[in-house]
Image (cartoon, rainbow, N blue to C red; front, top):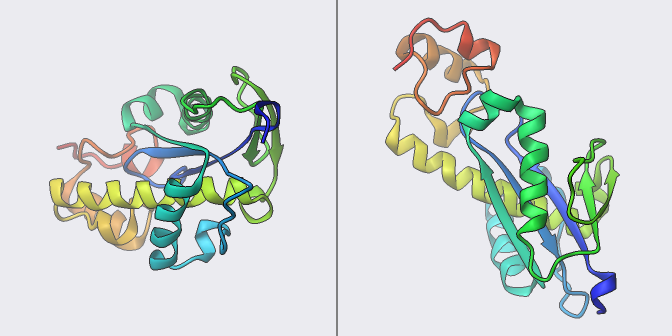
Length: 193
């Protein structure tokens, strides 16, 4: 593959949760080392995602996984934090891509290469599927770590999403340092730990 043909897929995990980082991944697949089973991470089981995560990390020409923390999410807003993460993930790739295919309909303004959005790209474009898997596996692992650090919220179970049990824990325990205070359900919680 020529450097001029390097295409990165980019996707994120964790835009909707009330807690934890948003994680963005970028992947340049190697066409000489295809990976069977790539799909949108949401349709794969945890076991499938984790097996594919290892395969992607082994076979890809390049990959990067970037975490944007709650402080930056609260400062910028979740959309802007995600776009910043996309730019950082692409900039971290070596070799650098010539084109970034980004899941969704918003293109970061300061990309280090040409970019194109693809709605439902995680289901349509293998490189975006690979990025989707890396981002989801990394974020889920981070939420399991946060579950140990902040017991009582069940982060390992719901991954920070606004489930009934998570909202109940917020009311009971208040918000921990990993909660996104700019999100209404957290902001409405009067207790901050």
